[in-house]
Length: 427
Ligand SMILES: [Zn+2]
Image (cartoon, rainbow, N blue to C red):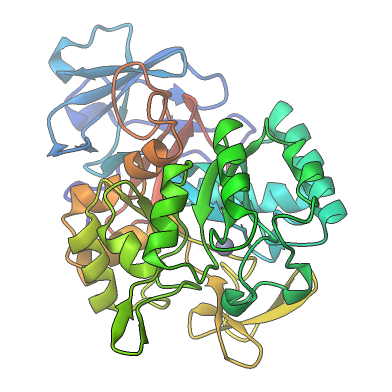
């Protein structure tokens, strides 16, 4: 339940949606026209999630698409329009750095209608930025996807902003393929990466297995191009991870999913990528916090070892997100099914991504894992922003950052979502 009644209602009629504010609410509220976008306005009567605390009694002031800062509502001049958040939680817009799709579509479809559906659905959930994540396919198909991604980023549609491309690359360990298409798997040293690196301007995250021949040279090259290499779908030892970190690796893909852990060789224990992710301070780590991929004990272990400033909540959501159990969906040439609230291989041998979008991972982190709410929000905002080097412009409610904001109900459904100072019309 909200501590305040729902006092702001969007009017139904007309293309210009207005929020009618009651005169009796104590402040001189004005009507906010969502389509015209007043250049300066303030969100009042919300619980504001800052990186280290949730504060009340302050207003978030927005001007020209950026956050101007916090202010005492009594100090706001009459020229500043005020919007009542109704006691709800105001957070930075969520940032999903590992997401494939939703509602039957993925980013592997180079098609505006498909991307529009995925990005509007994410915006509706309070996700204001994401890194469009691609499952491995033959190289020419991936190049077509990246072409489309580049065009989309140059002329974005409505919905969640695309920060770039995240490739679960073909250069992964066949032994750790998980739900990836095995026929797409390649060797990093076979020269096939060149057409992909022609998209260095949009590529942000590149998943590979650091133990493969040629992988270290590729990691070094990626880091030099400003693309974040990530260890994923990998059988590496902890020592191979350490070696890769010396040439630019600092990120690990979905912990516990498709990665090596400790094995015995005779009497000797050899740690794997899992233990490296838990122990090495120089790594940021993704966790699919859908309460399906990982039982609560493992999520608690990751949180205890890695902490909220290096552990990123990611959805790894597929086109199954938002679809009911039993729905079949395809990514590339592979077919999967939604079952028990998660994506599954048809033979039930492996998960195939989640069906939970990022907003619903915050209550799981808070209530199931026991992460304080302010840290759970940080794991879906500032921590992923920092992991990909975007924290100067997004990820927290701070002066000078983009006005990407979400206002959540207590169940973490989004009540209103703002991207770049403009309310989305995705409800
Ligand atoms: Zn994935």
